[in-house]
Length: 411
Image (tube, rainbow, N blue to C red; front, side, top):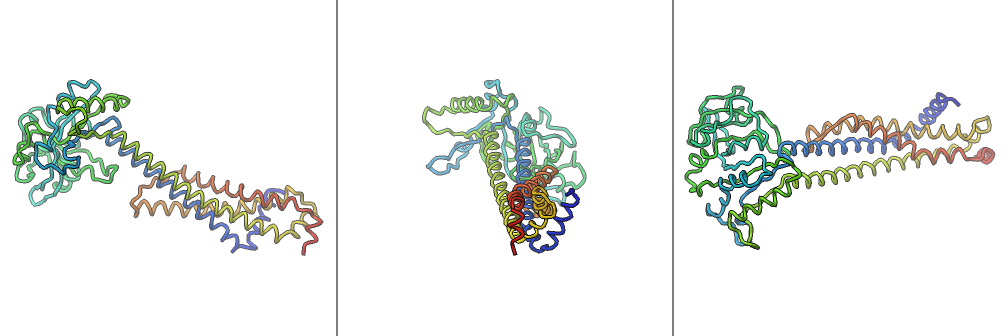
């Protein structure tokens, strides 16, 4: 028999029991659709992690106050909370050769007002290296000048979301806004970063020089001299990150006169460890999703095998007649294998269509990120072919091994 004859015979046989064939392919449809949706979600989540890594930097350390972490309750005095200072920033810069950039920061929240427009957002008082460490780029205007940092100048840089809220399509450069009750001149706006890896709007931010924040926005808080809320730094080589963290902790314990065995008054966050943990979690989630999709395909494949075995039993006399008129065992095997492949391929094609639609709906209406690409669809098509071959082989082989004489005796 030629390939065309085998295909025509397989189509004729499936049409004769089209309802059973459709129900049999349902398992493959669900399995393939599940593969596309779940793999797309897994890849989308991994892409979000990659985006987070590029935004945070894999060679970065963040230092924050650690006061009040013990069992003695939260201490509210400024001297116990503001345990970091500009002196610590200078010591890190001068005594740790591994460090590439380092910057201290203060932060707070306030109402930002321009004319009749206002927005409630967070502001940060920063040092010059802060922009490089966090990957901020200027869209319009210019970053702070050295004298702006030393003189506590009333200048401000706006994130893209704040700029749009206050000025619409205008840049706002040179305009005067109020942070709380203090007037500031807009010196620059930043390029948009979009949503961060944790779902936050990275562009909803306002930045002023560190000394400006200390004197003009936090003056009433009675901060210790030179206090900062956070220190961020990057190392030149990511391989030195763990060593740099150890050296950093030792340096700050020495500067803060923390004795052996005493609790640290700071905490150091290693961004790479956070990213690695989240990557591992995502990998486990992807494996779980893949396992669920694989189970769906196995169930669909077992359904194909079961129906094909039933078909062999029902068509024993037909098989005997084919062999009696000259069909060989290989012809019979090819015919039944072609039927199983057709069921699987039709189910796979429908599953791909449903899976693509499902992935697009999840990406549009769901909270999970989705990355749909040709490789996912190719993977699903490959699974469809493999399912038909694997689960259709045994029934086809069983049909080809029937004795023609015994088959013709069946009623």
